[in-house]
Image (cartoon, rainbow, N blue to C red; front, side):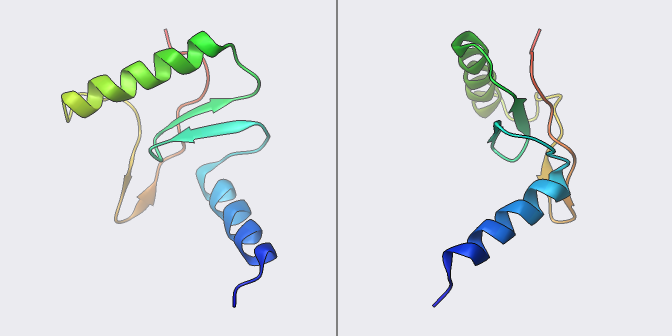
Length: 79
């Protein structure tokens, strides 16, 4: 049986790998990040961008993950 603390430590290690340094931090698809308390319209824009890139693969200019690991996620305000 894996204790809850093990999952927490694993999450903390993953956050360090991605360069996440504070909370709150919201990570979408291991590629897009929003740091800090943000207005709901920012989240709506992030989700719209993710939907758009899902509908048009290969058009995202954001970092992503592959077999070698992840680049640090983009953070906060989208233009």
